[in-house]
Image (cartoon, rainbow, N blue to C red; front, side, top):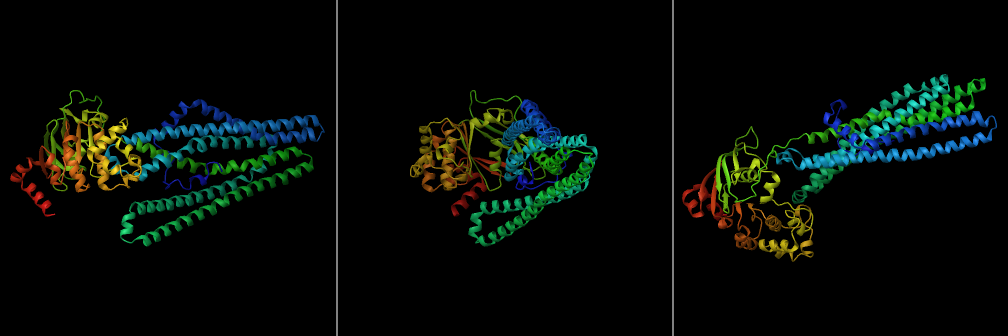
Length: 598
């Protein structure tokens, strides 16, 4: 069956969706796409009409051949009819090719354009969007849902018209050939339509269960593989295998139930067709004997009855196809309707000309949730151009929030953050990313070569520049010992490297981007003492000419800082050198004491 259930068995969990709920923008997207590709779509529709006409011509030509030429013995006319039948199927073949190819072309262009639009829109979302949305759900919407949407343009549109035209064409031809015999033939339709409708509902329910069981299985596999270290460390392999086995058998049973219903579909269609043919033979044969009907008409009726029930079965399932495709399109449009909480300025200002690198937090307040207390409240900080400022404080004091706000992953609830006197909210994100680089505590690397990972921030950098920054941060010394050197692939997320090695690559990556402002969030927390010492020695060269903000716990990291700020309870409590803070800040003294004890 075209666009049948078999293609949708593994398309994800089914949602209860009514086509009346389809977002107006979804309809507009489809209409706009049809307008942009009107020519190939019209050719596909024209080909569909030709295919329908040619498929209906065969039985009628057979009737003419029997009644007008075979019975009369006109072999010359019979030859022309045979040639016409061959020609009609040749035209049918050509029309069928262009109908299928062009409708698929229009559908795939629609899916391709929409997928790119959706992916670009997701990449422009604020970080809180990704905290609210599951990665698996976004992946499903970009990949699986949009594949289902293609049925809206092919099976759900071209084939729907094809089936409707075929049924109407057959009904009209049967009525024109012989109204009484047509009425007898149509007598079988009501019970068959009722059976197909009932069977269709049960099949939809069965395949909904298949998708739900498959979703459960996918979730379990993803969770188990992501947490494989915990599973192995706690000796839970047997328990996890038992859970997987149970879910796998549930999925198997659901598929068997669906398969049993699907297996009933074709016998039902066959019985319907045989019932129609039997009525035609019985009543039509009786009339042929009585001399009120020709043999050619009976042959034509039998040919049309054989063609009638396949599109009828398709139409009994078409709503499910449209419903599923509509739900998938609706889910995609839901993402497109998401507005980033951090918006781009309408008239951006650029700090690049005469850039100094002064950073000012002016009475900044921020909360991640309006119903919770502020993480920062009345936070003031001024970092001079070219200064290295270290921020220390206990866990939960707001250090990471300061980094998130300075990199504009979030906007302050109150107050303002300025670079060279320009509010961050007035700087375009591409300009802000150009002057700023972050070395995070938790490093993510792409599953590509080390060279490509270091080049991420500046793809045009030469191999010599890559190796220079790698040497500067101390990464070159472990890279050169790898079998493939800089061409070594790092694995998913950098899994083939140690935590310290990943941090060195992240530091080299940030340095190669040539930022004017460097943010180091515990950039040496995972490196070994030897590498840390090498980085500390190189830090003056790394930070030369740059304004730097360092988040640090290790006292050794603070040696390169010009000033240290002590943050607590969302406010900057004390600022000074290590010696000054030891004298004036009890909280700082307590942190130092705990670190010495540990």
